[in-house]
Length: 428
Image (cartoon, rainbow, N blue to C red; front, side, top):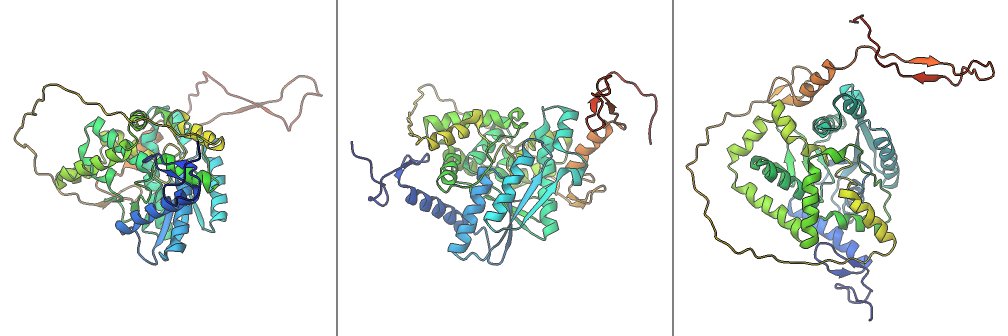
């Protein structure tokens, strides 16, 4: 059987089957088509204006790396006139973020872009490792999401930038739509599906140029462009609720490849049906502690490049795909339509009992000065709980091992943890 020709140029041999529609393309046509679709997304939504300074939320993962590469290419090709730079958030996760930041530093050199790094430690006095050791793995994405969103704003503000782009892709948006549906949180669909989002707590807007790009196609683009990126998943992300929505989306994609964009489009259509005052109320209530826990888990993925959203996959699926690409992956897929027959029941219509909602009034957080609809912002609420339980004194004991003089060495101390030790002394 002769090799299939590229569906576009009809001359080169097809090497890639697009996950989005199973179109068979050669390498050159796939890369050109991918870049063209991103360009169309940018121009159709008027994401940028000439001379604008843009901060790319960079994690070193595939999404942010591809975003940086594509924006650099399109900026030069179509004369956007943008001033691009990289903005990274260091959450303080040893063995993960410290390694990924090395990739970001290499990207900054490769793309000739300035790099700015903002750390949780300098902003909040806590690293995520310390937060997890304090509260455990359950719910840690709530803290990380709130902290990262504010860290992005503060980092951009330091640089005098009003626009941040993130590497959210179609899979991420579909997962967020599904999360809101599973939680019955329709008012948040508007923010989740908008390609440009802005928070009432900040004058810095965010946009998602990769909103309609499939995660698998981003992997293909990174592979064939031989981009340098970090592909390890965040060590804390498997505990996030997003993982359940992600698994469901991936299962739907296996049956129907267009399911991802179908969910995104459906989310956009449903968001239009939500009254504006209801959508605004979700922002008004966002600073309550219950709302923080219920909603901000979705913020933990993607803001400035969380590993879960940038370089992550359910059960290592993307890592498996990368390995298959190196071994000349053969893509296959099946599409099945299901028709359910049965009695159709019309939903009962109840008269609307929606109350008139108060308008949101912004003010500065009395503790950190960050704009908020409450006197104390989300981050300070969470920090208050953390700081109340933080130990006031840390003790470590260094012991020289061995009784033999030959084994004693001041350069090789043995540090032991003291457990069950009670100190009846309080420090101010």
